[in-house]
Image (cartoon, rainbow, N blue to C red; front, side, top):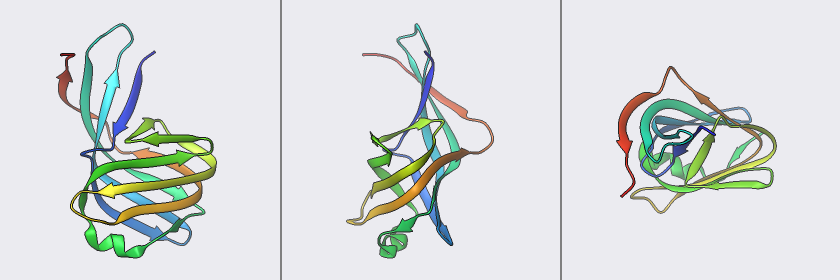
Length: 134
């Protein structure tokens, strides 16, 4: 089965937008890894987008002073699933959602607790390179 995921490590978090109970994290760019059925090679792409949490609360607004920053990994959870250092594409879920993202060069964690999460990618993904097994 073909699959696409965002590699959180190295993706850039440019801003966090808070409007009411919506917290949106801007990836500019997010780095995607695409895997095709039957191929040992994977491909790397980039695409901008938002990780949007609804019914959400940002745990510590002091983290906003560290932005923009490179993401150094972390967890994103939706219901019973926790994704470490990656996000599946597509992603849309209602129910308990959260994130705890590490920012390179900062001791702060970007932590959000929410009632729903979705990933809104913009435009089309742009090719970077093939990733060949060693």
